[in-house]
Image 1 (cartoon, rainbow, N blue to C red):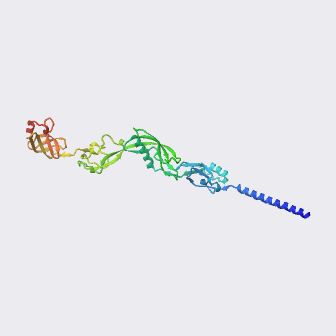
Image 2: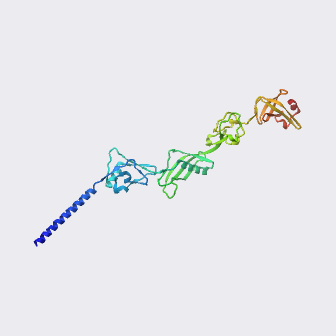
Image 3: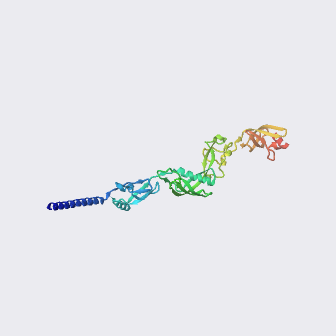
Length: 343
């Protein structure tokens, strides 16, 4: 009986010791679990996803790595998270970060792929041409620093969802959706600017000396905005080729009507063939032009036989035909009196 009592007492003592040890271990684990994990804020963090997590912001977050803190900004954009909010969300997840007093927060940038500016302007120009017609349009945005980004894992693309343009001024408003893929949730932005029609006009390929006749080999083309031209500018190469430079001309510049003239067929003080025509009669003699003239011009010519001045029409290089009293070429009818004057 005594031995049994001793065994019972020993069993109870052992059970108490085990319970005390278990409680001690539990308390130790709880105390360890209650100790916040020290973390360090990252410098200039970046994200690629549509959300920002604790792991994006802090080092050494352990199992809290995927906890969402905030929505990420649009691709290529930034957002600022204040220090107080960061400390609070860290504590809620068993993390310890207080930061020094100089830290006001952190700026988070979302990575993205930038849409080429040429693609953006080109798509707006294409839509403008569809609306207005014309050859080609040059587009300029009011916000010249406008850049559009899509997520890193998406191919850059865009589409114009809404487009309104003033036919007279070229001012437009466009709603741009990017990326263009309807399967991807895209962003929208409203852009304003101007679409200017581009005209192609003939210019000289290089310098042309005064009096030189312009040929097709001398012609090149440049693009200009219509408002850069006026009614005196030449826009058709047919109005240039075959004419002569009225002055020394440089290449690559828009030409004006006064820059070209009919080629000079008769030079001042040059000896010319003076012709008198009439049905059944053709008289040719030498004269001296007192003034220069192009094809079809009326010039004064001295008859070298009689030293008399007559009016004549330039009919070719070094050739003129006497005018009748009414101002018409002799070939259209001359009086005998005029014919006598020629002789």
